[in-house]
Length: 359
Image 1 (cartoon, rainbow, N blue to C red):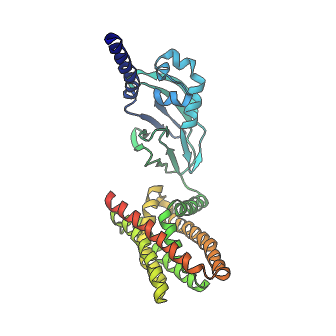
Image 2 (cartoon, helix red, strand yellow):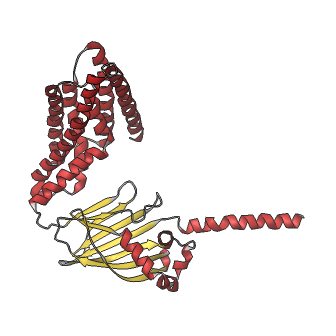
Image 3 (cartoon, one colour):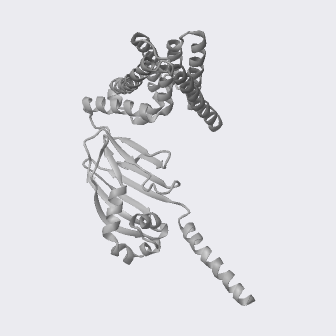
């Protein structure tokens, strides 16, 4: 019985060690994208770990891909996996990439594929990643070389999903305008803090003239700091700006509650004052978009127009709904203001603490 118990224990220990060993084989979940730009082409290699590729192919045993025979037997599926995961874009449009031969890279426990495509006539080449997003720790190294120089060296992960190379190609001004309008519009709707600040300003309602005055004050202020920061004249640290943006949300919520009691309306001055802070926040995003030096002013104005379009979309959606509520359910209006303002304060306070601790 003792021998049987000992054998059972050793068997269980060995079984537990197998997945651990497999995990250790993939303790560094990396992939690599290496590109070389010629005047008329882009060529390079993409290298991926066999564990990531096995996951893509639905293989239970990654070691199947650790031999040349295994790579050959799964060649079609591997090509499909590389084609699916490799995301190269020219001015935002995804490119079709020709895949070459597959090569086993034993020292990296990886498989490599050659890639080639005609060099696009575009102002920027964008590489999106990481190559595999099924595990949070995955990282993709990106290198782009031009005439022997390393033009781009970056690391993509779940917190940094895109890198850009400014190709130097002459830009179509219409493309610049459209691209940066879209970026400005998009940024508002992926930034819950900016949305909540605007919603906080709208909760008290008011006439069309009042709302236009408030939004205009916010626009004027953030346009100034957006330009100053983008041009590099004033660049405060995000460790200061991000907590201040959160604080602005708290202040607007508190002001709503105080205004209800005192019948005052300081939203326009608050919008103007905190607009300067939000402008620096917008600029931090704009600087990451590979601004065209030959069309910097146009890109800046276009981004700002996109931001304004997004703000007006929020105002034109929310303000009529609040006005209708006050008209049809006047008894509900104070409760909407109070509950909404408390929600704004709670969210802003959470972000404020989170960003102060992160800083």
